[in-house]
Image (cartoon, rainbow, N blue to C red; front, side, top):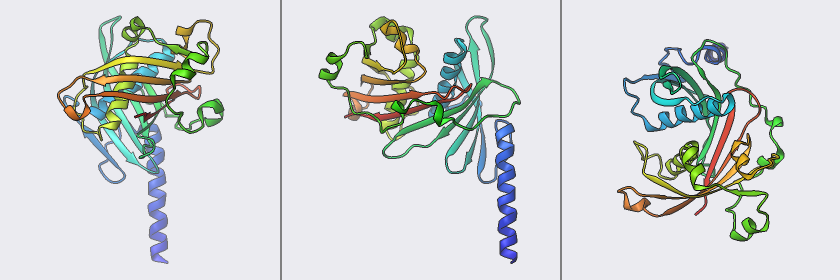
Length: 267
């Protein structure tokens, strides 16, 4: 009876803690299980920087801003069925050259079949508002819910040039988030060994989306899309010095700060 009561109390405390994190997770200083607060002067952890940069991309995409990542300041980790990272970082607005505090909540649900399954649930200028952690799966088109697609063949690409859009060289330069997506894809296949952004060169990107667009380049602005990326690594590690392929799927459920990014390699 005593063991049952103790277990019930633990469950109660855990439930209360999860509610607390849903509201104040970015600033809860609690080093006991299941969370841990990490603070850094310079923000060296490369994976945390990727989480923060992805959050800034989501905000820029949804709000039309052009914020830039500076460094991450601190993060908190809470482990439930998935792993939630509450990241506080410094961002810069080039329009005013101001630096401010920015928050990203990222849920990681990766596996051997899905090296990257990253779900942003909050991407915002720092505030104390509660986070809406409920992903609305019904709002996402069924086209994006199946297993990750196989690599796009040359025959498929040639069969329907309206369905597929090949990103132009100038667009690769103008849309730096394509390099972020590619960087995340490469990071996933290196068993998280990277400690800094690698020298990658994108050779080709093809975009597929079910959303109606008048011009092919407008597919880059689709909320839901699949990207087929050819790229190569130009760094010093010879074991990675070859051509690489990745299939990247981005979906949104229409809620502010919500985005799902899935990546599989295609070699």
